[in-house]
Length: 130
Image 1 (tube, helix red, strand yellow):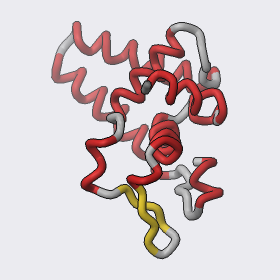
Image 2 (cartoon, helix red, strand yellow):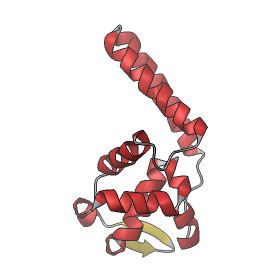
Image 3 (cartoon, helix red, strand yellow):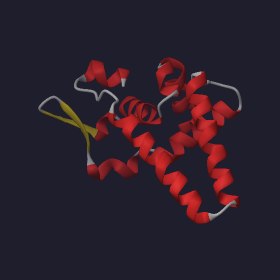
Image 4 (cartoon, helix red, strand yellow):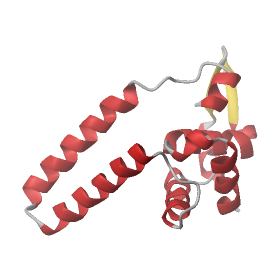
């Protein structure tokens, strides 16, 4: 079931191929709308329903499996970024752990800064484009 849901979102909203947060939110909103509530025009996920939806990690892994199989490819820049991250982590595993931890923390901080610049949805139309 999750495989079909992820495939549908990746096919119909191509920008979700580049952004796992967007993929997760769009999948949850499309297939589990009963788990959302709106307060003053803002969408919120009902805390008690979190366990009724596929986990973000399952959704991410499903997207990754599709892309590794050559389907629903992300933009070249995003694919390179993900590959560089994967290579860095693999290298870190087999090298000095203190240096590896510093490299991963530095990378995570850089990714966090980029993420904070992303436009957040404010209404239904914006949400579906997120």
